[in-house]
Image (cartoon, rainbow, N blue to C red; front, side, top):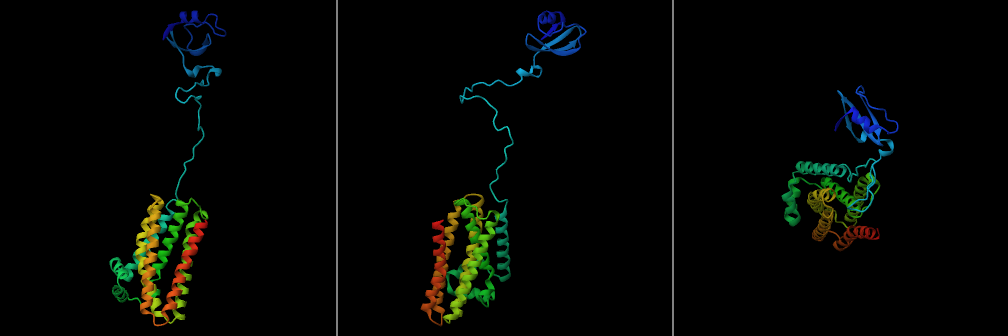
Length: 295
């Protein structure tokens, strides 16, 4: 409100430390009866107002009041900086899966291995022979990128299962390459043992066809497991169980088809070769299952 200087003088009389206001006062602030007053000159009148800016130091703090909703004192919380919590690896796993996908596509294009024919080859022995002739496969080493990609994907799937399902951090950011390297080392050792069994049992040709047939299964498995692993890590962790079931199913199908091929093609001791292949393929799976159960 706007009052004259005479009115303000009458209000200010008796207030400690307040000078009488004159028409010559330009502007300023004072305390009248313990209340802040802002004075702004407007001709022969002055503007009389209150504001929190002009409050005394003992009145500057906000008073505490009892909340009507939560029945506690209203106090400022989380005044400090709240750091953003990021859950993820910054696309690290996605980059690895992308590289494996590109390698798979390039290899299949170079070798002219079509997915449709590959599916037919795992269902029929005749189509397997056709694929071997069309792709110009001289031996099982011609398909070495397929098990490399497949076991790399399985290592990535193990990393995703450990971090998302069990909440375990394995060597931090090194967990993915450590698991992938472990699966690759395991596959290479198993490959050497199978080749040695072929030499010992006089079944080199049967073992070579066993490995070639398994490579076709691994190609299809890689095509299915790569997207499932990505979705399980970045979207929905329950998809990891589906990926694990797919990997287990392909293992059983590959083993059954491979052993049947060995029994029909081996020129040496079929029974011993059958037993040894079962040991080489199944014992590591049992060991891994035991480790997971104890873990």
